[in-house]
Length: 218
Ligand SMILES: [Fe+2]
Image 1: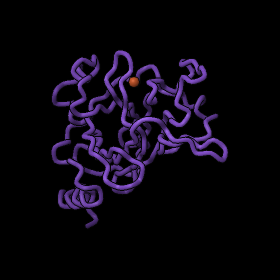
Image 2: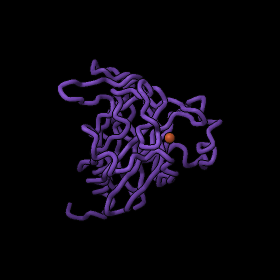
Image 3: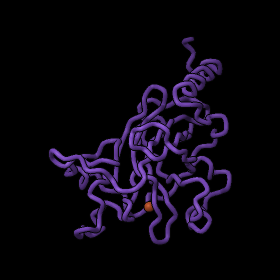
């Protein structure tokens, strides 16, 4: 089995990922994800360095001894990074950022007035994919803000493909059809950037779950 490019090994790897993460839809997602603008609210790394908390759980913020909970409907995000050949990508850096339940981003250009932000929402978080290409993050179901349908921004980095930036949308959200960026996407590119939210079933504070494969160039 020491043949990384051989189809049988790839098939086994894909099968293994399916077992671990309830069958991410690799077969229907071989088209590389469409890149989109990062928008004006990517929090600069130097500015983030002062944050006490920038882990993979955006739904809670540690403030000294206190753990603040984000407003909004909490969402568990299980992502798999795989390439167009179905190979799972180990060690990809995954960053996500989105506005809070009050529709504000954490960014130096957004004025920090009292009551303007949800102090329990981290705004930005990062994770790294494991050997099966998977990463888990916890956030809130994205909300609309003026001019945009709900979305989660993301960046992926890995030596094999460099850096990719795009956005994840929510399936069947009524705002999608009037969103200027959604409308610009080719119809064939939309599934690769659309989360199918499912009601969470475990008693872990989550309201929603979404499993999604991010397909990167081979
Ligand atoms: Fe945005």
